[in-house]
Every structure is written in C-alpha cells, then in structure tokens.
Length: 274
Image (tube, rainbow, N blue to C red; front, side):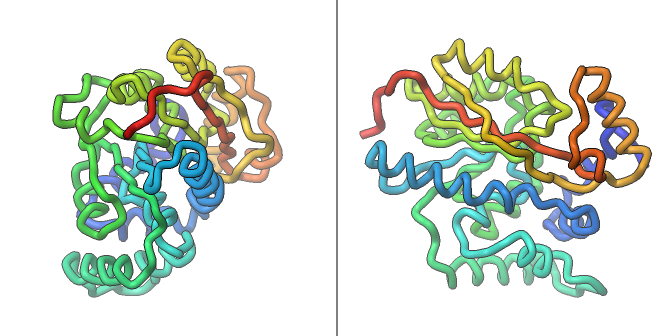
C-alpha cells in the first residue's frame, strides 16, 4: 500500500478510470458511506434555500465530485447500497462502458428527478465525463482551483451557484478553491455545507469565509466516512491527529475515519439571482 503525506492510503487511481466500477469496488470493502449520511442534510438545505430565496431549481456545486455520487443521491431516489450493487456487484462484470452508461441514463430517465441542478468540480476529466454522460451531473467544471484562477468559461459555469457542498475533499482542497468559487459569483454568496475529516483543521477555511462575510457553525455529532484500510493507515492517521492536538474519538478508535459537518451562510442577504 502507498500512503500520502497525511498518512492515508493513496487511492488516487480509482478517481481517473473510464467508469466508476473501480471506485466502488475499492471502496465497498471499506464501507465508504459519508455521501449517504450527507444526503438528508444536503436535501434539507436545498429545500430551505428554495423556500427562503424563491429559487425553483437551486444550483448545487459539488467540489471534488468524482463520478457524481452526491448528485445521483440528491437527484434520484437511490442509496449508496444501491450504487454499490449497480457498480460493484461482485464476480465478473462483462458490461462495456457504453452498456453501463446506457443503464445509467435509463435509470436517470425512469426516476422523477428532484428539483435541483448539480454542477461538479473536479480535477479528474474521466470522472467528470462519465458523471455528465450518465446523467448524474448537469454540468461539470474540470479545473484545479488550488493552483489556478478559473478561466472565463469556468467562471460562467460556476456563476449562479446557490449551494456549495463537499464530502471529504477539504483538507486536500483549501480555502483557495472556496474563495475562487465565491468570487466567481459576481457578488452573490452561496450557502455552504462541508463534511470534513477530523484530521484536517477547518479553522483556515472558516477564517477565509469569515473575511468574505460568512458565519460558520458546526453540526453536532460525527459521521463515519470509511474504515481504515489497514492498521498502518490507522496508526499513521491517529499519530498525525495527535501531533495536531486532535484527540481521537470513538469512531477513529473503532477503525473509522470520522467527519464533521460545517455549515456556512452569509451574514447579510446578498443580491439574489433574478
């Protein structure tokens, strides 16, 4: 196993495949579940935004969206377990990529979509391409906003965002990306909801958002993200947490990465989209 600088097992290869099967096959034994925990919170925020601002179809930007998992959960009446069964059923899977895409598009058409539009932001062109063609994402922004300012075309895709969400990428993605997303809105301030692993401090992001006029609160409780892939990964992550002054909790001690949910909203109402 290869480990990254944070002590986590490197799973970079599963995000750049032509379809999501390697992603789900690798994560299913680890019990990756945080998108399922996020679904009711994101759906509730979409409803609240719709009611508060009178926006019939709010636009959600999913940062680090990979193959559009959060979008599929939000827009379709499905679950993580159903997605695991679909993409990682076990045994030999003889379906071609084209056949899998056809199944996904048919599933998306057969289900009454929720009144929400989801745009994905990711550095993986392969994952974004699949998610859009499958009907999970409505549009995609292929960019690394940690390194570069968005282009004019990317800013146009980012503009009009009502809610920014993420389920685990913050820590690798920092306040640089979030600041660039907000500045692409032309004066509007989207709501935000981020599930962040406890091993990553949220303070720098909270300070950067505060400078943009946001107030952040943390939702009580912890959420399991996935199991540690090995005893070595658990030891490395817990050592890093201890060095950062973060006391491991019950979930980490029991072998799980634990995430916290941070909600950020602008202090003052901004000019709304017509």
